[in-house]
Length: 79
Image (tube, rainbow, N blue to C red; front, side, top):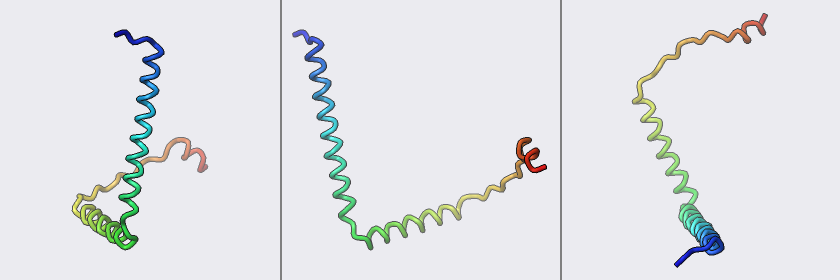
């Protein structure tokens, strides 16, 4: 069985259509899942994530920043 150029382009086009349809289906599924939360559930989840991030930030070591010398351009501009 030989595949000529026309058949090849038809297959490529069909694969593109299938890909777009699959992406749309996944997007709709994710949107449905997202809309299933009530505003209170979303708020509670955000508060939980924030508390967790704040706790993680407190455990990290603090890094002191060294002063950076201004660029020549900034030094000349301020004269």
